Image (tube, rainbow, N blue to C red; front, side):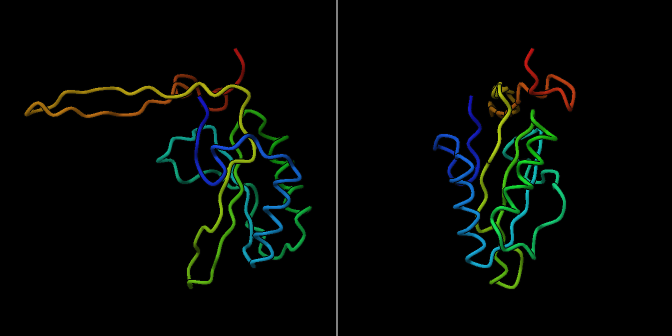
Length: 141
C-alpha cells in the first residue's frame, strides 16, 4: 500500500530533476525549505523528525537537494519529505509539502473495529509497521 500524503502523492515517484524544479519554484516564491523524516507516517503524525534546521538562507535548489540526498542516505528505510514555508501571512504556513523518499516496502494499514455503548461502532487505523520496533519498521524481512 502506498502512503498518500502531501502534494504529488498520487503521482509516480519524482526524479531528482523534478524535485529540483519544485524546489526552484518554492525558492522563487521566497519559501524556505526544510527536510523531515519518519518511520511512522500515520496521517495524524504531523510532527516528523527534522533533518537539520530549515534552510532560510539557501537560494540554490542544489543545496536543498543535497540535504535531501544526505537524509536519504542516513535513513534509507524511512519516509523523507520536503516542506516549503510561506511567511506571507505573518506566521509559518506550509505552502508545499511532498514525500521525496519512501522505504522499499510499505506494509499498509488495517482498520480495527470496536463496538461501544448504544450500538456505536468506532474504527481505528493500525499501521502494520508498528508491529515492529522503531528503526526496523520498513526493513525487508
